[in-house]
Length: 525
Ligand code: ADP
Ligand code: ZN
Image (spheres, helix red, strand yellow):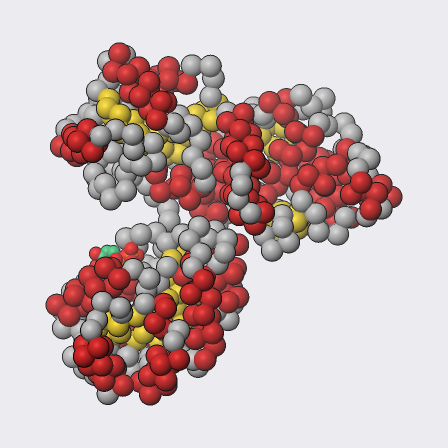
């Protein structure tokens, strides 16, 4: 098929049979067609493939797609061939003859798209091939694998950065469905891209209402009341941390008039598939599950996803709650949250045998989760912000905090103290040390850095350690402070904190166990 130099929309319609681009595909496609680079973050199903397939066809030369998943590569190539695109794979599944045939087509200009595994892409032999093939672009799938902060670091991806360097003149597009801002940073840096190259979109699920309830002594009763109140007799998934929690919760719900079945890795294969089938077929069934449930399950009319225990990370939370409301109709993501559960998770991380770097990443992710649970304002904003998607100045109107603003306390002075303390200690320290300086503690680290001589030493003695920790976390959630991953957790100030430091803007913090102990607490309705 010769569509070189055609217009992207024409290719979309004539080759792929779609009427229009999704709103966030068009600018990416245009940028690549114009010779620019892009880092694209979109959730699974968002339509990332077209973002490189179409520019590859519009521009001269073959598009090279590096993808780590052999089976997915073959699926994509089959689908492309079916619509008449000249596509092929180069991976270890090929025999020598087949491989040479693909290589020949690649250099002879007979391919629109060539999919290749990362370990092959970085070999010298392939680089030589590429210089002869004059590729139209380089696409890197699952780009988060290039970062050690991602959950799926792959050493062979580091060599991809070199490949990119060798072909710096051709457009490069990196795509992923999962990368928090530090991971995005690393991907951009390693591939020689800038902030302007970043496109984050499509993460919002506007029909899902996000709700977090303080977890009391009878969380199952709370769950029961939530279901009765908002989703009686409807399909739902309830996530618990442990198998035991799953079993007892399923029994408890059944005793209280719900139709509920357990699902976890400890059940027999037979039971698991039976419960999964029931969930897919029946109406009004609740599956109580550990995280093992949900992969590849596509039931459109799940009306609620409930977490009786906090999830491990915000990525996990987004993925698990994303199973609600696939049909686009209203659904609820409900969570019962207690600070103690997070403290326990933190303890598990601290005590784990993992290396420091890994532990540090886990702690960072847990803090982000905490920021979400304790957010005083729009939860959707916190969630989207975590992935790097900007909701602008708006709030969503469809989360608990937007619908019923929580009790907050006037925290402008506290915020100013915390922000100045970060500034005075040079924006090089984590929340533990900053808190110690605020409290006027006498630690070895404070001695070593002479931090008992800075003007903010001890100015926070009116509050407890837990309060300051909460203030700092909330400042991060508000985007006034950033956690520098490369600097091992150093807190740094962002532009957004200036109006507060200058007294031009006020800050409210969410009331929590910690804040309510404060003598300065004032409640605003
Ligand atoms: P991702 O790689 O982001 O998970 P895909 O590229 O596989 O997503 O696309 C997901 C689905 O959306 C596919 O079935 C694809 O054909 C469809 N799709 C993508 N872009 C469009 C579009 N502009 N119009 C209609 N369907 C689209
Ligand atoms: Zn909201």
